[in-house]
Structures are given as structure tokens and as C-alpha cells.
Amino acid sequence: MSKANLLERRSVVSALLEARKDAVVVGGLGASTYDIAAAGDHDRNFYLWGAMGGAVMIGLGVALAQPELPVVVITGDGEMLMGMGSLATVGLQQPKNLTIIVLDNEVYGETGGQASHTGTNTDLVGVAKACGISDARSVATMAEIQAFAASMQDVEAGPRFASIKIDSANLERVLASRDGTFIVNRIRGSLGFGPI
Amino acid sequence: MHARNEASTEAAPSWPEDIFEILQRFDVRQVPYVPDAGHSQLIQRVLAERSMRAVPLTTEEEGVALLAGAWAGGQRGALLMQSSGVGNCVNMFSLTQIFRFPFLTLVTMRGEWGEFNPWQVPMGSTTAGVFELSGIKVLRASHAGEVREVVEAAAGQAYNACTPTAVLLSQRLIGAKVFVK
Picture 1 (cartoon, rainbow over the protein chains, first blue to last red):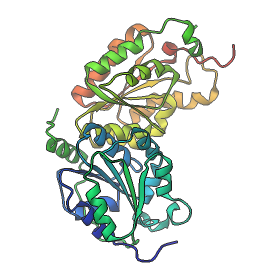
Picture 2 (picture 1 turned 120 degrees about the vertical axis):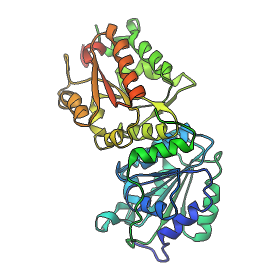
Picture 3 (picture 1 turned 60 degrees about the horizontal axis):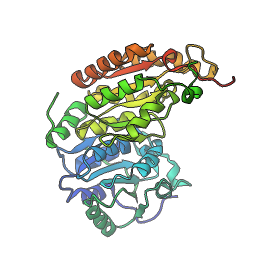
Picture 4 (picture 1 turned 135 degrees about the vertical axis):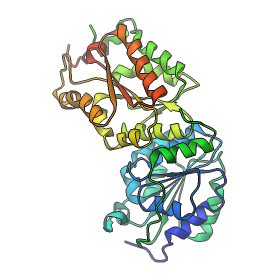
């Protein structure tokens, strides 16, 4: 079941995004979106409050449209399990600028801490690899996270996938904007696209 | 006639070409799809077009999310699917209202007009209703001669007015799938 020496999610996400530069960052619904908000609001933060299972595909849509920009999806194990087929879709498209990070606490934290499949038999790194995302790994230390964060800026070497086992503590929510048109139009504006 | 598996013995219909031309004219760049026989000609055209990215999906809801991301990144897209896939998308359709992005989907119909397979009928019968309940406008083309103007109207309201729109391409247009001769 849970392993020892698990990382703390807010420190992990802060380290991942500390030198994000121009990256667009998609946060899966629930705690991942709060983590991204806690690391600092940003014009290119793509906060999701629903659409469970869609985070990777939203990231893929941005990545294909903006191949020169790093695009980073940060989501949870439950959200990733619901959209597992999207790893096959990414494996087929091979977007070189897309990074997928799963913050894996092995539970559905937002709904009461029910066990997810990753706590027993499901190995998401294995799934990602088997779907053709050859750069798929487990990341277990803050030093590895810092090295991985630097690699996210390389838009020629993706797609890459990382699973980071984190502790399952429920932290205070840091509420991002939940107005979808604001969120998406702010990203578009930062990329130079106006309203219709 | 109208048998999808006999298409190779007949002249290719021109309406998929009409759709392709409209997608090009509206600068559609990402075309996610779950394959359907009725879309096969259009899919071939998209796969061969360098300005478009064809994105095969494992399930149709992926395409709704992809198009939301594409829009955030400055590109337009259109989702190709069969009526049975519409039910797979229901929760993801929320994104069309949440982001108010230009959503266009072209849906080949099953479960109507001489259907052989009863398993297609329940979803085919509720396809238009599911879209309407999800806040997506529904237009339908039943004859080859009207495909161009229907898809053009749909693309216009989707891309110019950010009005999420589905075009149902009737089984009458495509031809009922023949299982036994």
C-alpha cells in the first residue's frame, strides 16, 4: 500500500513550477488545481473544476496548437484513471512539448479518501510506457523533481510522464478562479489571441 | 444501393468533399475522431492534409476536451463521431458552456432509416435530445444536396458566434450498413 517517505504535494508543485517560464499549466480538478493556485496565480494556469478525465486531452489540444511552448498537465491519480485512454492518444500523437505529471496519493482525496486503483495493482508509469510514452518514470525525491522540472522546458524531447507518490494529507483549499471563460480567455490573451 | 460496404463499387459521394472544403475555409486545424464508416472519406482527406492534425481517439469525450485545449491555444477544431459516441461525451459537453468555445461536431447517424442492428437504436434515438439537453444546437442533413449549406451554417454559428453546434448526418444520407446480402 502506501510507501514511506512520501512527498508533500504543495512543495512538489511549487518546485515543478518555480521556473516554468512561458509554460501553460493544466491542473486536474480538485487538489491539483488548488496546488497550482497555491504555487502562484498565472495567466497561463488552466484551472479545471470539473471535466474529470479530460486534463490530459486539454493539455494535448494546447500542445498541438502551440508546439513551441512547454505544456504541463498536473493531475491526480483518480483523474488520470478516468482518462487513461488519453495516454494512448498522446502516445500516438507524440507531442514533443507535453509533460504529464500525476500526483499520486492513492486515494480520492476530494471525496473522503476512498482508495484508488493505484494503491494496489495499477501502475500508471507502466500504462504510460505501454501506450508509447517512452519517457515515463516515477519521481521520488525533491532532487529528482528539480531535475524533472528543468526537463519540462525541453519542447523537443517529449512527451514525458512522471508519477510522483505524495502523502494523502488533505490540505486547505487554495481557490483559483472557477470562471471558465475568464480562465480560457486569459490564456488566449497571453498567447496573443483576442476575443471573438 | 447505399450500402457502406459496397462503397468501393460506386462513385465516391461528393458531400464529404463539401465538408472538407468548409473545414478548410474555416481554418479548422485539429480534427479528433473515433472512426465511422460514414466518415471514412472525410477522415482520409484530413489525414492527407498537412494543415490539419487528425487525432484518433480512444473515446469520443477525449475530443471535446481536446478542442477546448486547442481553442485555448488559438486553434479551431471539429469532432467527427458516430451517434453511439455522443452518449460517451455527456459530462465533457459541460466544457462547451463553461469555456464558451467554438464547438463543432459532425455526427454520422446510426439507429434510424433501415437500421439492421437493434443495439444502435436506443442511442441513435436519443442523439439529438442529448445534444439539446447539453446546450448544443442541432442541425441535420438528410440529402447529399443539403450537406454543404447545413455544414456551412453550423460552422458559421459555431466559429463566428461561439454557439456549440452538432450536425447530424442522417443514415438516409450515408446509407444503412449492410450486414447480410
